[in-house]
Image (cartoon, rainbow, N blue to C red; front, side, top):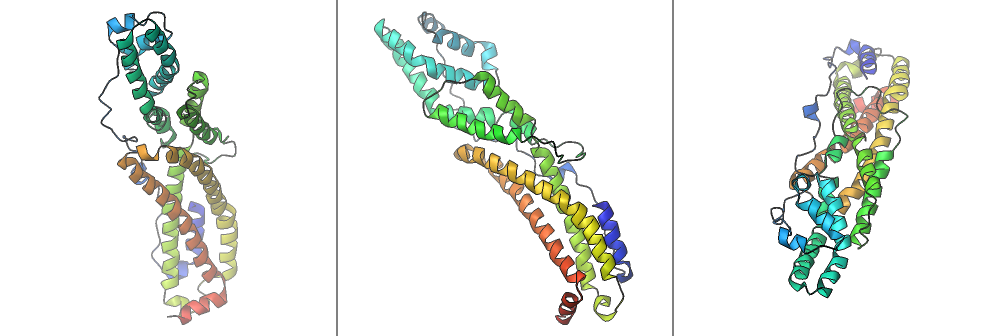
Length: 326
């Protein structure tokens, strides 16, 4: 883009417009993921625990181990993804234990366990959302790299997009009542998300948008110049055509197309996840979503505008038509 801009400026230097300085994008100009992705609810500070005496009376139930781990200090400090695994295991094993308690005349504990089971089922979707969208892996997906290097490279695998779809599928299965889970498979999907390129995509798109806006301002200055319509040889159509073909079409547009491809692949996959948890998203996240999507839309529009302005400057007939409108 630096090369294309400098050559474009050289083509129109005789018009004596104010040259636009090249610019980089700082991280503050890119919409960053908010801290709160999932909105708070009135249930957040309500713990579902079984006291020690009740726990001892669960002897013989496979659920005992799950309850022990959840009530332990390390269990309470576990990340949301591990708490979700514990919740799914609880939901899977609790019915069997409730039946056993009823058979052994432990009616009070059976009722307590039934209440805890209902509570965990009611909050399951939120638990999944916290472990996926609210987890460190999703934050890592959107973390911006210090440098873009040669992004997007041809060896991007697309595994992170497939992981988003897989997690939506797992979520739907769990909510349908089948809470059996492959812990390693679940953690694998989270890892694949953490290694995705969301942050690089945002940074690269913001860089492209800012530069295209500068270049469009440059062309607007050219098109607004009084000399453009009064002189005949202010620039060479052939030279401009060569610059556009080699450095815009052959370079900038190739990169823009690669970014657009990555944006489509990422956005489609992420939309499936955001759609699944839409009612649980925080207002901060919804606002960030709008800023993120606006960045993509504005970038596409800026590239299209640039093409339209070049079309006017590349043909004598279009330029005459433009001048006749003044």
